[in-house]
Length: 173
Image (cartoon, rainbow, N blue to C red; front, side, top):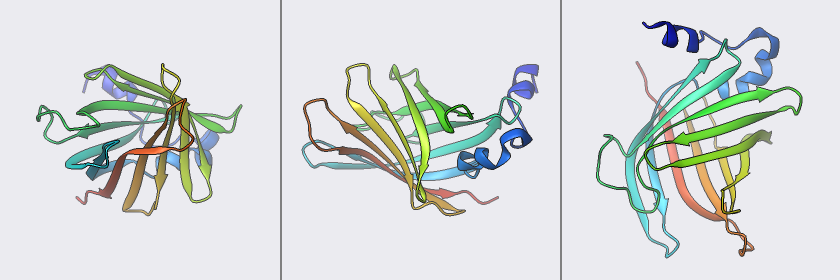
């Protein structure tokens, strides 16, 4: 293991904010995903994917990798495109919320959001460089599954539009 990998990885949450860190820490592990992309015209496209979460930066952050569709290098996934990106989720005690950055260099998609618990769900909100609002939500969360919804709200629209729906199940063993 290189020093970079050894220094990035952490075995668990930092004790200073261990309870707050579990908002995303409960996802640490490997997940299978069924991804449904929803076109503005009502079409749906389904592909398999995978998601991996881990503790990083002395346990002060959770990082994940999303690969959709799987295997990487598959033909372009309609509507959503192919994802091979990472999210860095850092708890910020000064705002009692998470600062979230998504990086997908293959598609040149970069997003920043603020994430918080909202009831039993987690809701992340931000905006694109063109001003569209983004809302990414983790819902129906159990120890072995969750649903992730990616929505946008164009500046000219009154309602949110579902773009991507991910149903994830924890991989065993």
